[in-house]
Amino acid sequence: MEREKMILDASVIVKWFTREEKREEALRYREMFINDEIEIVVPDLILYEIGNALRYNPSFNDEDVRLAVRSLIDLGINIIIPTTEILDMAINLAFKYDTTLYDSVYLALAEILNDTLVTADKNLYDKTKEKNIKIL
Image (cartoon, rainbow, N blue to C red; front, side, top):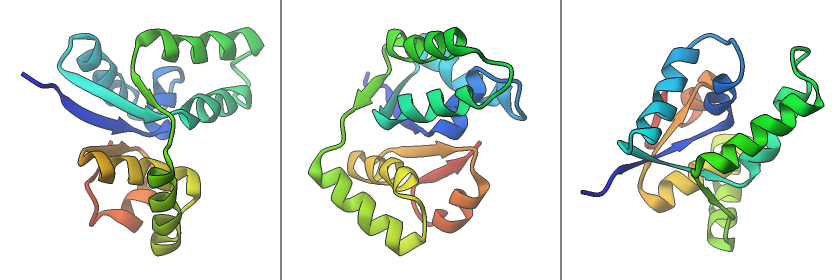
C-alpha cells in the first residue's frame, strides 16, 4: 500500500530540534515517517531554512547546526530539487496569496503532488487555507 505523502515546511521540522510550542505534534510526523506510515516530501531549501533558523538560535553552536542538517539528509526524507514547473507555480502563488517565495515553494510542491502541506505558520495557513494545507 502506498504511504500518504505529507509536505512539511520548515516551521514544522524546526520543532524537531527545538523546544517550541507544538513540538510533540511535529515529532509525531517524524515518528510516522520512521514507522513507514507516511512519506515526507520537502523542497531542498528546507536544509537552508532549518540551518538558518538554528544558526540564530542561541542554544545551538555550529556543530549542532551541522548535525541537525545532516540528520535531515540521513533520515531519508524525500528532498526535491524544485523544477521550473514548481518554481513557476510558486511565483504565481506568492503573488496570488501575498506570501514569500520560500513559503510558496512548499505550496506549489503540495499542489503539484496533490498532497497536504503541514505548517505551523498560522499566517501562511490563514492566507492559503483554501489550498490543501493543514495547521499543526
